[in-house]
Amino acid sequence: MESVHPMGRKERREREQKRENYASKHSAEKRKHTLIAIGVLGVIAVIVGYAGYLFVNMTETAPGGPENAGALGSEHAHAAILVKIFGDEFDFSAPAYQIKSSWIHFEGRDGSTIHKHATGVTLGYLFETLSLGIDDQCFVFQDGRSFCTNEDYTLRYFINGEAVSDIRDYEISEDDRILISYGAETPEEIEAQLLQLEAQELIK
Image 1 (tube, rainbow, N blue to C red):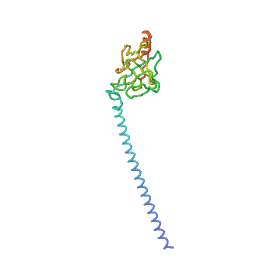
Image 2: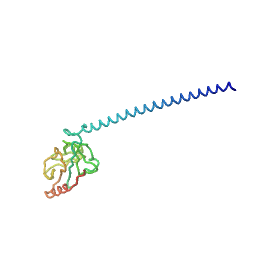
Image 3: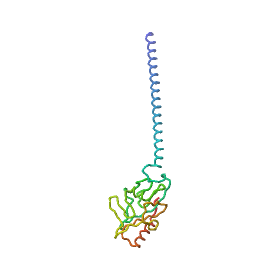
Image 4: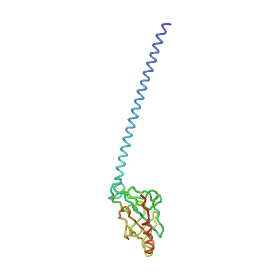
């Protein structure tokens, strides 16, 4: 009986030793995997941070913006606009005209306030981003329909109540009022449109 006992103790010790070795090896493996995971997450965090930094800086000087424009955020101006075609109001609140450029746009499902976010951005650029044609003679819809000055009808532009021949190169300032009117309106009817424009609230 006694000769078997030491053998049992030895086996038990070996088994315990194996268990301890396995446990410590397993623990080391877990530590190794944890450290690798932390390292990978750290690398991802650095990449994400760098990508965010690049995005912010790219946005400020993003390609595709208007020529000669300042950095995004260099200015924030709002102007009211009213476009009347044969007396009907053009709807810039439609999704097709909402936030087509970061530099200048309509936003928040509103079609009456222009938001400009940088210096050097013109109304011509705004209409370009909306795929609307505009010059000193014609206003052209996205579907190609054009409304041009002719013997019967006239395209008129007004900035702050003053008639101007073209608005493409104009840069809005805070609280400007822009009227584009096409038709055969009398001076009284134009005055009524200007009064409607003056009453429009700026949505900031």
